[in-house]
Image (cartoon, helix red, strand yellow):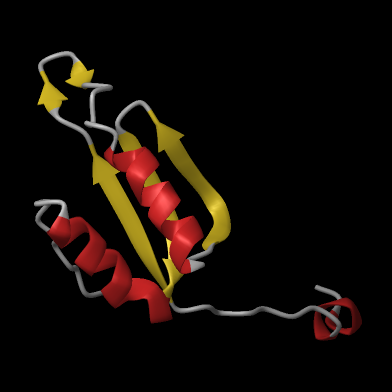
Length: 92
């Protein structure tokens, strides 16, 4: 271990909301049909200026998983609730 090198390093911890939307489940896996909700959500994020945090999210095929800022949590939950999609929250 080189303490001089490590002392120059830094770590930022960011509280975030991890949004995971999974389309309908079929015996063969996820169905691509999501009734356009992923596209609608992305449009909503643009309109509301909700940015995703760059943590290797996945979009497409009826699946969306990405991290967003904690301050946008209520807006995101409200969006999905208005679409008739149940929002589950998990505490860490």
